[in-house]
Image 1 (cartoon, rainbow, N blue to C red):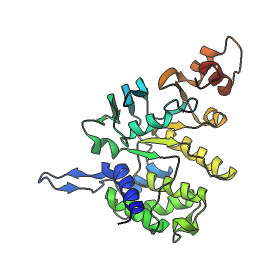
Image 2 (cartoon, one colour; image 1 turned 135 degrees about the vertical axis):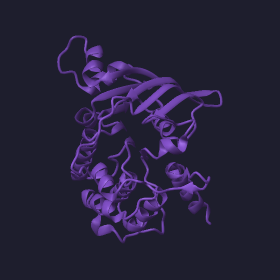
Image 3 (cartoon, one colour; image 1 turned 90 degrees about the horizontal axis):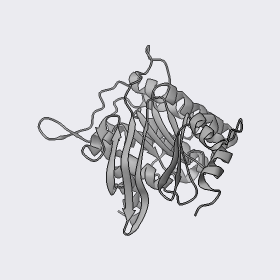
Length: 301
């Protein structure tokens, strides 16, 4: 296997290792017990005769989350929670620790201290159980060079044990408007189309928790609008979502809550209204951009 192929396989193994469970005999078991109809209802919002059950507990809970690289502390004792139906906007200057935070929350990289719980599962004690319930969408789409769009979805379905996956996959391709690209290789796709494929793969197993790192990169205006609608719809169905983006006007339209980071530390968090009130100095209708500038002092240092 070439170094590039090995790197790609390792990436997918990190993201999708959450599918692996053990049977009573100790053998790996990857069958998802949910039916295609249930997964489709979770993934694309199609009615399945009932609404998604909204739990009263936090779906994402970070306690004193810390990440160090040698003597450098990228994230310092970060604590926050996201409930079902909430969309948290993660914002901060360049180098604030946003992507590192998302990768720690998703289990892509280990944290140096603290704890993370995903839908009730301790990520440190039960990483497989936690990762089954989440999806992480990186800012740079990473795909297999020699798998078509359809084969990528088949590969992910096999890892997660999704039987009759096409009943879920085809509506996702239609929603993301890449049905006509089903037999294309990544080299034949635009940057935006690759991003859509990564999103389709991540949504295939109906995650309860979603982490988006700059999800709109490469999308055209119509794609951006539909992606925003998709995020909002999934939150209404009970998913907990963390969205990192420098497009603050997007976060104002989509997010219910905001968390501002600077130098790896929390500056402020709460609902958009609460954080705005804290930095508004009594002024009405202060934008998130203005709140961000006031909270961070208008600089990265």
